[in-house]
Length: 108
Length: 116
Image (tube, rainbow over the protein chains, first blue to last red):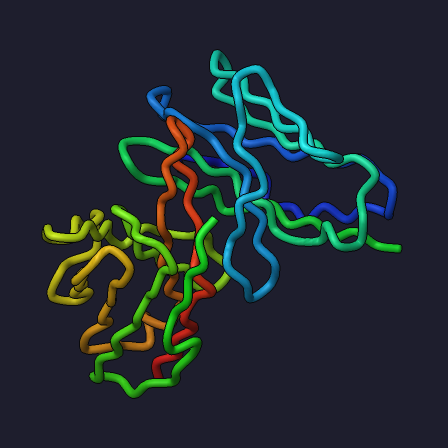
């Protein structure tokens, strides 16, 4: 079983839609969690950290459920520019563990 | 965040040769990391490189194949030795900018390697 698991998608949604990505992690000792965004042929870029209380950054909301070992990312009012792969990441014993990513394609 | 550059951005190499990838950061950082991203896959950590000490390699990666240098707090190199087509991948360096407990990492633009 992979340490961080994500639905690979792709998720194909129209502009303006709300889309949610889920992620589970297996190591309960994981200390921090992040969502990264990776555009095609580009490096991953930090989108947001995930806090236990949940956090929001504009159209993006991230939530963490430690009891269920579950992380989510909600994107509201999707834009064409949101098309990318979204990587769920757990920080554990001084290193990042990446999920395989969920691909999002927003169409007009 | 940090500004991170890598050289070369891409290369095509012959089997059996070696390539050294450079990573330069615009600020002093303690921890630097080297990752590999094979086609269609997510990122896999190769090793952690801290200045003044030997690199720490992850399971499946060895120093003879991926020697790393970390001569100062702004620079590191990764060498891919005795290359085979299976080494074709994107190699990325990253740095950790600790902000209390958050320990966020930022990535260089990557080096796209093709081995023939």
